Amino acid sequence: MTVILAAAAVMVLLYLLAIMPRMVHRPDRRPFQGVFYAHRGLHDNEGDAPENSMRAFRKAVEAGYGIELDVQLSKDKVPVIFHDFTLERICGVKGKVCDYTYEELQRFRLCRSEERIPRFEDFLKLVDGRVPFIVEYKVEWTDVSVCPLADRMLQGYRGAYCMESFNPLALLWYRKNRNHVMRGQLSDAFFREEGMKGLLYFVLEHMLLNFATKPDFIAYNHKYYWTPSRQICKKLYRGLAVAWTIKSQKELDARRKDFDLFIFDSFLPANKA
Image (cartoon, rainbow, N blue to C red; front, side, top):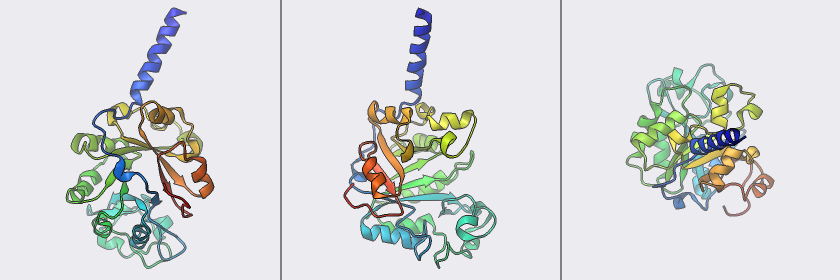
C-alpha cells in the first residue's frame, strides 16, 4: 500500500509540474484587463464587415473593444489575417492560404462583402496602439516561420499585444526569442468537441506541455471551464484565464468567475469587463 501511495504521489507531482505555466518574471497583465475582445474583429459575415476584415477591425477600435485575430503566411511569406487554413468557407475558392501569393489572394472577396484578406502590417497601422489585441498564430504542423516574420513587424509597434496558438511550437519560439511578450496556450476539449483521438490531442487538451512552453495564460473553450488542468492553472498557479468564444450575454454572465478575459462574437457585451 505504501508503494502504491508513493507512486500516486509522484504521478500527481509530475502532473502538476507538467502543467505549470510561467511563475516568475510574468509580463504585466494590466494593459489587457478591463476590455472585451472582439473575435476576429467586430464582425458580421452576412454584412459588410466579415470576420478578420479591416472593416471589422475598424469597428472594434471605434467601439473601444480589444481584438482577437488570426495570422498566417501567404505563398510569398506575407503575414496575412485569415482564420481557416483553407479558403473555401470564407472566400468560396479551393486551396489553402499558403497556395496563393498575397497579390493572388486579393482577387478573393471575404464572404459577400467587398473586403479582401488584410496584411498584418496594415492591421497594425489601423489599430496604432488604440486597443490591445491578441494575435493567434496559425501553425498547422511544424513550420513556425510565421512567428519571426510577424514578430518583425511587431518590433516597432507601440501598443499592447500578446500572442497565442494551439500549436505549442509557436509558444516555444516566443519563449526562446521574445520571452518578454505575453504568450498563451490555446486549448479545447478536443475529444468532446472535435472528436479528435490519440495521445497528441490528450496532451494538448490537458496542457501537458506547459512545462516546456511556460504560457502566461490559458485560452480555453468556455464550455469546458471545469477541465481540471485549466482550473489548476488559474486557481493554484494564478495564471491568466481567457475564455473563447462567448456568444451571448447569458454565457458571459455565467462564466464571470471562471475567467479573467473574454473573447466574444455574435452579440455586444452589456457591461464592462
